[in-house]
Length: 288
Image 1 (cartoon, rainbow, N blue to C red):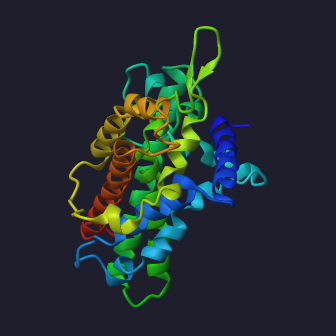
Image 2 (image 1 turned 180 degrees about the vertical axis):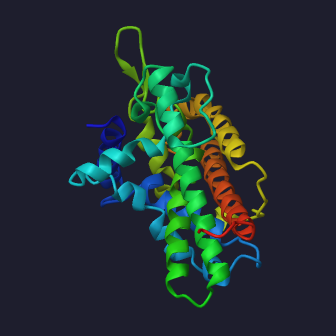
């Protein structure tokens, strides 16, 4: 079983016990919050169907986790590495900003590691960003085609899942669910489920997250995404500090502000990529 899938099972079980039912954090409600928050702050120049599509975008934002259903063996295997990047395992090297297969080749040949175990999160973001660019291009050319808004919402929602993952610090480290000690034991195991479930369990809502966000055009999307993931990685020590103090189980003002800031960061990245996709679509050449 893939390690992220194991954590998912722990999170679901923990959430069910604590909330009395099937509840999800960044896998469900948290991802929905990121998408709805970003949609609420889109500027008027973005098409109306997309600006008003918050609920649809929120639903589609959870699909990448639905694709990890244990019975979808082909899909699950291809999807599992898209949700994280264990930056320490890059050994100081930079992923190539070309495409996924160059990245996989670098990891296999230079690092002698499995790309699915290191993670392919930045490529998942870039691929779905470019799908949205293509969708918006089609809308510009054929705004009367009712199929096009539907696919734009699907692409935009899928993108929002991965941008939300990038904002979650534990999706940027091999210490995603505890730290291995010299004797082989794992200290603070369970932290992943606690942090992932925090937004939903402790009432972080789109109205709060979206407040003050403004869409900004990104000039170099790849560089921006990699910088964002690196910045997210810097919050790992603080996350472990809050967990050790029990502040994810019983939130303090400081721990709630910490999680809120990470959700807002995910919403900001989502908003900026959606907006940039719309602007870039104007300059896209014809498909064929």
